[in-house]
Amino acid sequence: MIWLAVAFALASALTTAVSTSTQHLAATRAPLVALLLAAVLGPVGFTFHVLALDHGPIGLVQPIAILGIVLAVPLRAALARARPARTEVAAVGVTGLAIAALLLATDARESATPVDTGQLVVAVGACAAVAALLIAVASGVPQPAGRAFLLGSASGILFALMSVLVEADRLYVALAACGVGGVVVNQLAYRAARLSASMPVLNVVNCLLTLAFAHLVLGEVPHRTPASTAVSVLALAAMGWGLWRLASADVAVADDDVLGRGHLGQAHRAAGVQLLGADPDLGAEAELAAVGEPGRGVDQHRG
Image (cartoon, helix red, strand yellow):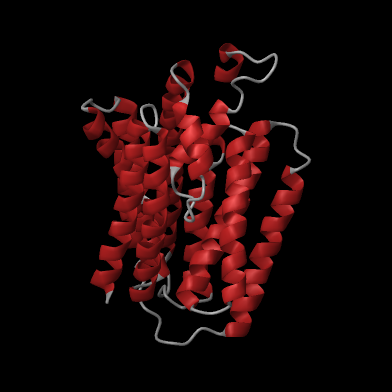
């Protein structure tokens, strides 16, 4: 039932948005509240995501799930009783339109043929190998932003594989390994550099890879035309720009908390186990990690 898939995917996105927005507001006042909300809403959002995949094609569900990052902006503004910045509004508009265009261009639908387990194993294994290679290369990259970019790409691959295996309903050991690995690598990316270095590429890679699986392995995407392919590429590029702008805006919020009481970082250190890796607040820890380190002041941290 496609309508159930859409409903559950929107519920997952909204849960992520509420978690993100409430943590922004509550963390500076009551870190325990933010911790409890993350502990409750994280699994709830993941459950909705799994239910969405159980009722509809992954090519439809995965882009909708990213709306959680977009919906967080107006929700956060409403909770704070303040207007969002114009750049945030522009980023929300561009990202929302890009996701809509991607959904229309993809035109994913339920597959009429069973999944070829052998083909699935080969494809998942190849992608997991690429993720492992990216992690290995990242360990030798001295620049924090470059390291975070590679780790974000690797975690995007792992989260995509997790969703693919949920959709395929098999290879459960690999599914668990991809989920745990995605969380760990995602946190390494957040610690390496600011959120804008890893979050956009994570979500774009996640979307791109799930669409590739939907088309090539799961049989959920009909024959594509050059026009639909071009629209998809442009939509992914626009979505990447919008996510980068939203991630940059969250960095500014984290900086404000650094100059305040610093509770945001405390809450997210304890709450950094969002299984979908879509909560941009978790990246605040990377911005806060520099505080208190010898020889590093706020001016250097801002740079």
